[in-house]
Amino acid sequence: MRVLVVEDTRALAEQLQAALITAGFAVDLAPDGEEGRFLGETEPYDAVVLDLGLPKLDGLSVLRAWRGGGRAMPVLILTARDGWAEKVDGLNAGADDYLAKPFAMAELIARVNALIRRAHGHATPEILAGRLRIDTARKQVALDGAPVRLTAMEYNLLACLAQHLGQPVSKTALTESLYAQDFDRDSNTLEVIVGRLRRKLGEGLIETIRGQGYRLAGAP
Image 1 (cartoon, one colour):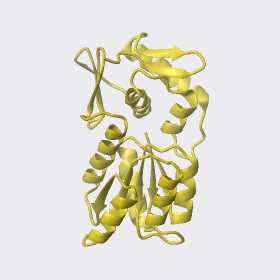
Image 2: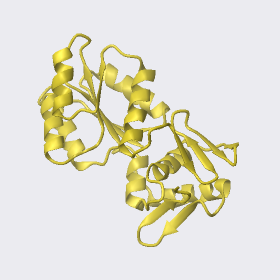
Image 3: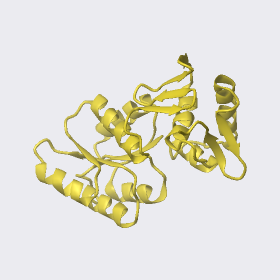
Image 4: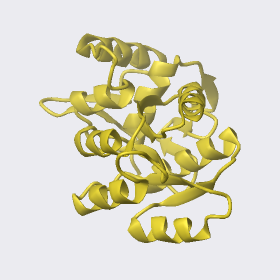
């Protein structure tokens, strides 16, 4: 899962990046509205954390540009504690949720996870795929009720497939969801991770769809 953070306060941006990476996300940072708008228009993100008070281009203008251009990724806006007008304007501009500063990082992570779940049609943190249970809130996986130990990269790939349960996900989309913008994306690594997951979960759960990518089996 890949998240964009658009925040001009460097210390807060780095705290957000560290917390999101610890929670299993690949994270890109944008220090101003112009760069944030560009990244949101050109890169695929599962969610965006967007401050409204940005230099060069304010957050509301960035959000309106995204929505006007058909970009539908979930957006969590950051507002001042007493900025009720900002919250209303942000929601009217197309934001999916808001969080007032200062906030607890755990709450931000929970809200981002919830936005991603809802965007993919999942009402609860648990995704069931046949014998497989994926708890997206706790980042835990169980097969036939027994816990499965996965690396962060293995879990992230599996979670991406689970969010599109029963549908093929291209290798490009999977690679982009795993790595931040400035990471050296090696397509061979993707195949290695898929191979490790198949050894841990069994051969039948992750299917190769010729010309389309991979698909997690077990859709209801």
